[in-house]
Each structure stands twice: as structure tokens, then as C-alpha cells.
Image 1 (spheres, rainbow over the protein chains, first blue to last red):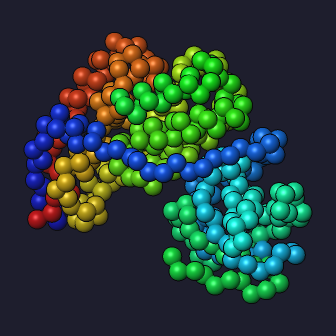
Image 2: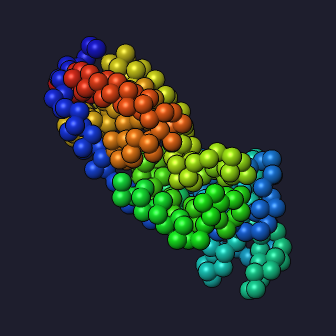
Image 3: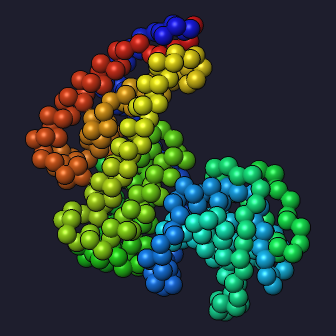
Length: 155
Length: 186
């Protein structure tokens, strides 16, 4: 143990347990919703692990291809029920929710729905940019593949 | 046991049967809403890290969701079943953490882990040096204040084993607390 000295701690067991028991977690409950199509999709073989999903949410830029207009969106929350299925919800600037299916290869598919929630089309997404472990609420941007990727937002 | 009791008592009020079919999405959602704070709280007290606690809680619910079709045969209340899964998951993490702490102690690199005089951090460091088995029983019985019987149910051991294991765990914790703190720098 060269390089630094050691000092004995002087705490008894009861005090140690007291201070540990006082640590209480009181964070918010993230919303949860399990939809019928997720139930039907329960045996999909490529469900990525939760940590990988968080990594994906921590990714800074999503680039989308297809007919969707370029826009800016944010993953407002990570829905664990979605994550069970390897999914996340993107909320665009108009407040519309889009479910993205995160694939094992790191790509994602975003389902576009109309005002009544009926599926209209699907857009294949490609993640780009540096990534780190996100907080679960990291802002992201996405844009069609045929346009320049959105700039990396400040974290 | 305020957190755990509130959850256990509220499950019947939600109209859930005593042995609910957790593979039913509606019931699993309700269970998630009711038990998420307790599960994260249990993990947080053992890890001291909120982000990590959320991650491990997500893992716990993911495992629970996959095992949900077989829940009826487990024979324990839903919350205790989740605590059991969470405990196994945290034990896996704890084994890795113990190895990391040992490596750092051998490397003797000052400032690898920030020195601290915070009692909670010192206590947590001592707790994490224990075997995952001892950590589990201390966490459930002393930190989360489950009864001996409830702790036995979560750990799937007899109440007598809980008592003897807890006594050994407390002794081990006392030894760790009296050990020099390797994080103390000159």
C-alpha cells in the first residue's frame, strides 16, 4: 500500500447501518405503458440490453431516412416497458410521439402515426455521433438521411 | 419498513389477485408502478449510486418480465419475488465491485477512489467488501427493515439461516469497519 497512508475508520456497526439506512431514493416514476403490439413482439430475438438502450439514448444524433420531414425531437423519457422490447419513444417538436424500435445492430426504426395514432409509415434510423451513458432523458435530433445530419446538441 | 409495506398493502387494493398473472400486461404495469420505488430504493441502499440503481432496477424488471409467465409457481408475494430478482442482480454487480476494490487496493494508487470522510461512504465501502451473501442479508434485514420471515422469503432460505447469516454478516462488517481505510490519503 505504498504511496499513501491508511487511517482506521472508527465506526461501529449500528452507526454504519444507521447511516446506510438513511439513504433513501425518492426519484420520479417514469411512465410506463405496455401496448398490444409489444406483447405480440415479446419473443423478438434481438432485444438489446437495457444498458445498450441507455447508450443509444445517450447517443447524440439520430439520422432518419424516408419521407419524414426534418425536425428536432427529444426522447422525453425512457419507458422501461418499451425498453423491455428494445423500444423508446421520440416526441417531436409538435408533441407527437413516435415509437422507435432499437435493433441489435444499433439502428432503429421509427413508426410514424397520424393524429389518430394509426401507423402511416416506418422510417429507418441510423445512429451517429459520439455517445456516452445518458441520463435517460438526453435530447437527441433526427433528420432524413438525404439531408445533413443534425448538429450534436450540447449536453 | 415503510416503503415495502406500503407497496405490499396497496397491491390488493389495486384489485390484483393474491397470485396475479404477471404476464398480463395490465397487471405487470400496475406492479411496476407500485414496486418501482421500492426496488430502486433497495438497490440504491446497496450501491449508493442512483444511476446504477436505476440501471439495475431496469435489469430487474426486464428479468421479471421474461420470467413473468412462471411467477405463479414461485409461491411468494410479487414484491418479494422482485426483491429476490433484484438481490441476485445486485449480487452479480457486487462481485464485480469487490474485484475492482481489491484491484485498487493492490495497485495502491492514491486518488483512484476519492478520499472521503463521509460516514455513509465509509460504511458503504465496508459493506461492499463483504461477500454478496452477507451484503444481501444486511441490506434486506437491516437497511430495508424486512422481518426475518420476509428476508427468508426473499432469499429463499430458512428464518434460522437468516439469523445466523446476519450474525456472521454483522461480525464481518465490524471487521471491515475496523480495517484501515485504504482511501485515506496523507
